[in-house]
Each structure stands twice: as C-alpha cells, then as structure tokens.
Image 1 (tube, one colour):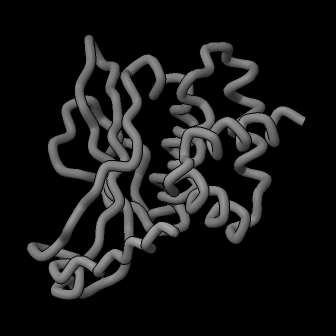
Image 2 (cartoon, rainbow, N blue to C red):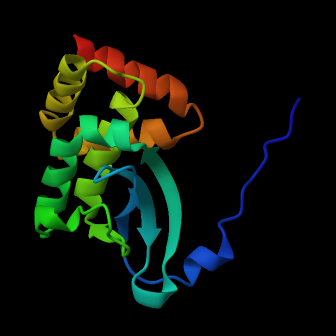
Length: 156
C-alpha cells in the first residue's frame, strides 16, 4: 500500500493580498513584430507573485493577434498598448487572462490560419465557466492531454 503524499500550502502565498489576475509581457521580435508571455499573478503592486502560463513567439502571436487585442480591450486598455517596444507588463483581468491562455494553449502547435481562426472562434463561444474548467484542466498535472482534448473538442 502506498502512502498518500500531502502538500502543504506555500506559506509565501498567504502573505500576498489581492486577487488573481494575469499579466501580458510583450517581447520584441524582428521589425515591428512581438511575442508575448502570459503570466498568472497574485497580489498587486510590490507584493505580487507571478508564474508563467504560456509564451508565444512573434510568429505565433501574429496568428492570434485578434485574440490579444480583444483581451487587452476587455481589460480596459487601448489596443495600442501592444507595441513591440513596450517595457511594462499589461494587466489583464482573471476572465480575460483565462480565455487568452486557452487561445494560446489550443493554437500553439497549429500553423494553418483557418484552423487557428476556428479554434479561437470555438474558445470565444465558450461560457466563462467552461473556460475556467478547461483552464484548470490544462494547468493540471495532465495538462498536455487536456490541451489535446481541448483542440479535439473544438475541431468538432
């Protein structure tokens, strides 16, 4: 019989006050292209803790640029904040960050623009609760399998 391994909650997370949110970090590419890194953040101001969720190269970000603009607009920013020279992270709300994370997870290995557009449309058609469900599955221990299942679900 195997023993059940118990995890203690990290004590440093208890020190952070605030809600969960997301940050979009813009990384410059060649010319005016840019890549992005989506980070999950806890807390605000100087006491925030961040963890990377997904990253997209300039080519991958170019495929989902419309989804990036939608997430930025819903967070209350102008689309012009997505500039290739941007240094400060762009704060996103929890719902916008979860939906954007799903877009990045589902479209990462896909190169065909028609397929990417279909996947993004499928994710945009999901309810908020459904996006949270799939986000938790994709971030879990069996995340790669869940990401493949998400792409299969959206293909139907």
